[in-house]
Image (cartoon, rainbow, N blue to C red; front, side, top):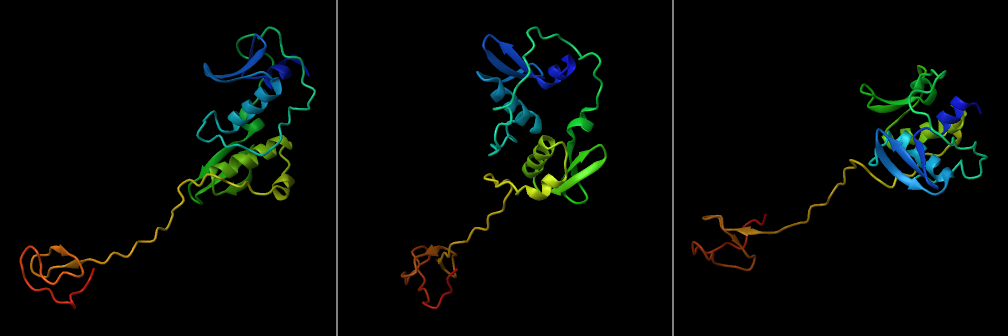
Length: 195
């Protein structure tokens, strides 16, 4: 790997002592002893746009665990990486919400890689595509993620049956065995409808 490629590979990771930290817009997103763990967590945060509410635990293995990693740069130069001009959306793609179809779409360089009902599902498939160099055949082979979080799922609650008896004159709620209304004193009919 050349120097600009190494810098891009280790983007958002800073070494402090013998630990590695993930930094993004001057915010700290964790400290890790192993560089492979920091890279994996950084990738997960990228896919979720550094939003912990969208970060979902994946069952995917850490691809950096058994990888021969390039040496971490000793001195990290500040500023823009010289000689490296690229369009991040073309390289990493993006997730766009289609308002007409009410679906999340994965788009890279104008090509749509599927439409999904939930954002979690779209992030999962985008991650799979990026790990396999945007090969669309991965989408056919991969099973849908098992979502443990159900957002905005409507639960149909059953209404308990409540039987009350009301006085026809004053409207007071009375017990079903009462024969006389304790408020107005009229005699209650046993055939009075229960509500």
